[in-house]
Length: 268
Length: 343
Image 1 (cartoon, rainbow over the protein chains, first blue to last red):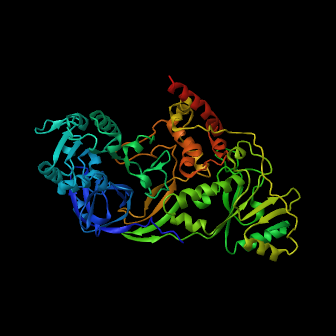
Image 2 (cartoon, rainbow over the protein chains, first blue to last red; image 1 turned 180 degrees about the vertical axis):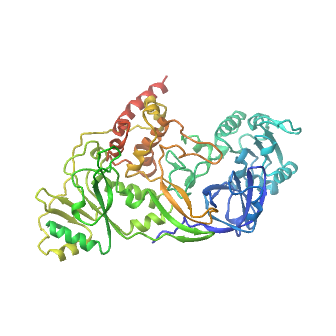
Image 3 (cartoon, rainbow over the protein chains, first blue to last red; image 1 turned 90 degrees about the vertical axis):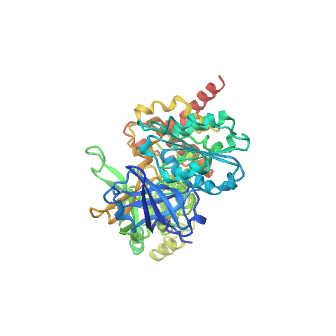
């Protein structure tokens, strides 16, 4: 049987572009029946004109749309980003396993995310914020560098009102109303009802993930109850290009979401 | 089916082949080496058997015919995409160790995840002619890696000292062609395709090798000896990595083509991610990553070693780093980490 050409991208219409910061934008793209077809934590290869193809995690899932939060895209400036609305980009995917709700349903859930690491878990937090009955309580801790770097402000407002939500900024740059420090400082303050059944998801830069997991383990959450998502340079998403390989593991095929018990054995 | 063919027979075979195939083989490029007044043997499309270098190993491997240094996947105009044309079917002349490497390329491109379309369409239209080795090369260690016996070829062709060719044609179409060219060429006597039974270099992979060997100090010297040029990857017949690259034809990026280009895990940028992180910044870490892929973790995933022992990485290294020595130091590395572990 001849192989299918999975490198050929398909056009997806840009429904809306949401600006978060000076450098970060969310592209809301058309994707029929996304809610049933896409899992948070999965990724697509997105073609940006004059930039090329890059792996971007799904940062939100709508009924018929998926969000991609894109940083530092040369073509998108204040002047031209509205120009893209209604046009299409070439994309291919989804790739990777993503987060599986069954792993967390019925348990108390703690999600800790830092910076652009909020993108892959935004769908998870949002899902449980809208279906609180599916979990035995959810706490989300998100951290950004400064108030200028905060992503998904509308979602954060919703989460504040509906779940146990905490946010830190590394530096408030003198602005009032922000908690300064790292997300790792919040972890010891958590008081899960039952440590043995509490589940946790951690996504962010490598040092943030390392120290957050240390904190969760110290709190008494078992290793087997922690998941994380690995960011690597998935050039193909198909297990061929090699860039995302860690030991005998291909992050694109076997991840990017891994149980901590697996992830701790993966050494770059 | 075995044949004893004359030079004229093989020339006629080449003529006949070229109606349906492009032929790629190791060829001498006089003055083509990287240093002044040096030659290089590398793969090129040939038209006559006289162009083939029989007595020396090519510096670059046959893999360029299957996974070219740069390969156009498709052309785009806005969101309209046109797939690139498939190349003509090809016949590849290659060494016994290289034939073993084909299985490694197949493993990644055909069997790690779904089959790769661009690889698959070339691979299915490709035939392999093994050029057996009658004596060992300087740096090769195929016997240690178990890749010294020719297997899986469509034809084996050996140029004898008297200028005749001994041929084992497995592919029936190839036998038919030879029978048509010279009805007297077929021989009844079974002759053995030669192979090397001993190399100058031997390697031994520790049976108890684990990822713990990364903690050993054996990798430290490569922090300064290795210059991360990536030549070892580019010449390796089993290295398969590539990076996506867009080439714009116009200023606003509407028209262009997408390529994949060979990539190297030794070269800067290989692991850079959008968030700004990168992994394995030290060259010694990259050497460890590459070495363990070749003789440890590919085996963990697929059940056999990736390295075929061709020795090209050692041949090409501008810093005279011997890859066989790295393999042979793994034992020392394991001893070191075991000793430290028991403290």
